[in-house]
Image (cartoon, rainbow, N blue to C red; front, side, top):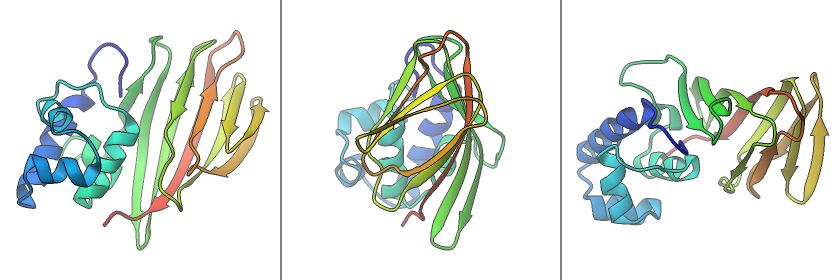
Length: 186
């Protein structure tokens, strides 16, 4: 989630993960195996002491039958939450809103990347996709063997089952919005 300073989201994840696991009567070993993470990593996440990827959080949420938002937000809150912080303080991602519908979940994110910074995402499960819209700067987007450069006002949509990469090749701050659709957990 973060490459440097701890974000408030770590404590939300620790609390929500531990509570959901215990409510479902799962041991750490069973949840770790189901989410394909090590037990040691799970112990560290539940202690709020682990630097964990968004992809790992996705797997944990799915294994518990939760949406990503339910895992990362403060209990009972629907306020935006910063989930990722890059090497630069100007590089970060904030989950703005999440909507669970029958059969799918939609998420709206706001991203910023400092000049020269990148974000490399692991592949998502089949059936996931996203649309990005650049508000300012230049987004170099790579996915499934394709590479696109988008300027302010540019959009692109694609499946995320092959992973993808965001990069800011410009000299100005990049700001873009990301809308994600994914199969409902469970």
